[in-house]
Amino acid sequence: MKFRHVKSVALLASLLMSIPTVSPAATPTAKPKPKITAPSKAQIAAAQASENAKAAAAANATNQLTSAQNVLQQLTAITSHKQAQLVSAQAQLVVATGQSNLATAHAALTQVAVAQANKTIGRMAANAYIMGGGFTTLNSVLESNGPQDLIDRLSILDQVGSTDAVALSRYKSALVIAQAAQAAATKAKNAQAAATAQVAAAKAAAVSAQSAQAAEVAKLRAVQAQLMAELVKARNVRITLQQQLALWELEQSSANTAAHTKGQAKIWPDRGFKGRSTTRGSDTIRLKALAYARAQVLARKPYVWGAQGPRSFDCSGLVYAAYKSAGLGYPNWSRLNAALYFVDTQRVPLTNLIPGDLLFYSYDGSVQNIHHITIYAGDGMMWEANSTRTGLLFSSMYSVPGLMPSGGRV
Image (cartoon, rainbow, N blue to C red):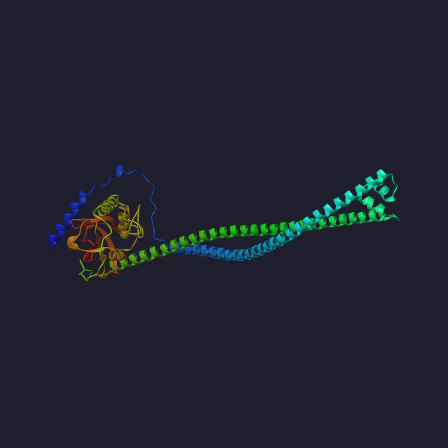
């Protein structure tokens, strides 16, 4: 056993010596790189406060939208009422137009009567002139300044011939009737035109108000949609931070327990734990992930709990970053803790491991107490982010106690 142990140490030393080293002289002077840490409770509280503020803003926008929609319904009812008034007024206009047409026709007939009476008076005047008579009626006709003046003169005559009286009476009646008919027709048309204009103006005002309110509702809906999107984003940030903190705390707790647990088996017996029935990656993806992990170890990057690169890593952070760099990203791959990676990969016996497979370590052989994860490099070796004390390592897959009896193929 001692000889075998010495032989393993010698083999490990020779493998480590074969790894290229980075010359200090070739490394440019740089400022210390900041460490990446797990989200703090204060960060989560701030994310929760931001989410609450977004939720309040979204609720306020919803209330404003409801109020605007109520006003819009009222304006719609007003517009419908105005439209009904307009239809009624248009129907009244049809009736009034018919009445106006009849009145206009009647006025035209009365104008014909006036014209005929006027001709009769003209003939009377001509006959009186030819005969040289000095009839009072004819003098009044000849000396008058128009129809109204003629009527006024004739009304005060004491003696008028029977023929002249009939003619003048017809003339006067025809003229009065014609003027009254024309005035009635004009009044009806003007009144209906004014009513139509008033209703049209009311309709235009209601339509304008409805359009303005509809625009306001559209604007509020857009604001609400934006606020809801921001709320969802804020909620996702808060949930992600909480999940990350919970995973990291679980992994750290398991690692601390493992460090103080005695009697951990070198390789735990197979208890039949199952994983995925299929893989997500390919040989190309696995080799790219392996190359990424190797580069981080050779760059002597530090171990920081909860970090997933690019400056520092913890164990599951190195696995996540390696496969993400190889093109296996969301939604097929996410930042999990070591135990969840065990469940989310295909089980592979240790005798069938290929480079790029994942190795898992538990302090009691159960899945829930897996505390460490590495990337198998081949020939019994692995790339890992070990601890804050030792950093990132190229080491034997048996150097960490508690190896699970199967690996995980991505």
